[in-house]
Image 1: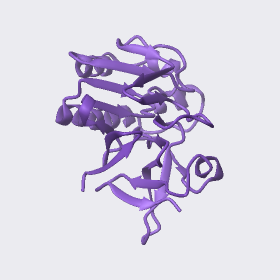
Image 2 (image 1 turned 90 degrees about the horizontal axis):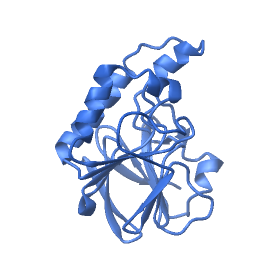
Image 3 (image 1 turned 90 degrees about the vertical axis):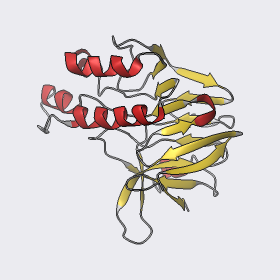
Amino acid sequence: MNVHRFDLAGSALEARASGALWWPDLRLICVSDLHLGKSERMARRGGALLPPYETEETLSRFEAEVSALDPRTVICLGDSFDDLGAARAVADEVGLRIRTMQAGRRWVWIEGNHDPGPVELGGEHLAEIALAGLVFRHIAAGDCPAGEVSGHYHPKHRLPRSGTSRPAFVYDDRRLILPAFGAYTGGLRCDTPVLRNLFSARAIAVLTGPSALAVPLM
């Protein structure tokens, strides 16, 4: 199945196998942690030299979701670029592709810890945004009212039988954390205390990949 449907604070949401969140009632798509330009940032800072194709792959997947869903609103939930230098170094072609996706719709860049300032690619640049009972921010607050949507942790969870891990959504009745959408992003296991302690015993992980597979977090 390509989607897992669930409710958060009275809103009907869909966790998609791609790693994107879809809110049908608002025609809103949300992705987190694109980390565009990660290979450029690592090379610039003297890190490992990675094949410089992650921006192409990430944008192609993002474009496919936007084309399929035709959202009215797009929220990029922080760490859209690997740092401000990567945002400034974005190629003209990449900027054109982003502006094409932005055309005719509301586009919100949420500030992340990797990209705390606005980028010169249009759209709104906000620390967080509240819409129809849900609050979208980059990092989960320790104690928050029901209806928080965040990213940052790049959660991943093991398949019950094979033991392999996939990026995963994690949610309970109060909050939702999205997986990283970027191609070169690692992940934090859902049983890591910093993640596990954010959720109740009723939490669900939705693994991405070939299908959206929902399993109990515990």
